[in-house]
Length: 350
Image (cartoon, rainbow, N blue to C red):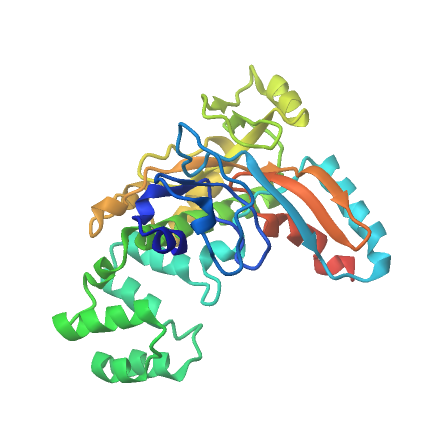
């Protein structure tokens, strides 16, 4: 948005491979479909390192991965424990490929709950969840609105910077209901809610799989996919484990050529067979959802067919630096926070 304003062009003419961490020093490529002098770009806190022409615009997902250097601010005697954890991760074939906490909201971690209610067709409840969840929120202005259901009074109380909440309250003033209120949000924001709920289900299934089956163990019915050196999934055919191929598949997993997958549930999802399939069905039953619900009746444009995501990954070029920082590369879509979590578990006592 800042680049588009600086160059006086539509932001649709600027593309990139993916978002980077907000609280970090980051480097990435942008493609700008416009004639301009790179010297024109003057953004506070950013600089242009190089500029050149290309015959193809970048798009989301084009990157192979991200390189990280993360300072853990640990005691000087932590290096042995860090190395021990790194060795353990390598021995067991990686760390759980969880979606990081930021997937569910940076301040109010209920993005997935809004998505769940949308999937269930509970439109008004979803909008209310975004404005106030009394089990989580402690801001008095949110609690007051939840109790009073008076949007006019709430608009006087809600801070000006809460633009999205205020837009929902404005909708309620105009229409007398929160039904359909989420339509005031941009599509990409509404889609985040659905994706967050899919991610939440994935994390639940993966966690229970680890407890009952194992992270990278392969059993009849498991669905596997090829991975590259950065543990990016192949877009090729999925492979289902059976009694004829299971020995070969287990060997290929141990060689980091294949990985089992867990579904991101959608309307076109075929649940896994065998033991993992039982876990998936149990969780979905407990959540009160079915695959078909991901054809959202209130928001058809947000319907999601689903996909699959590998159970684990390993960092590339991993190193522990002298200042207790970790340096590594992760494939696209893999969360550094999920890797760091393995090094900072309470059992390590540092």
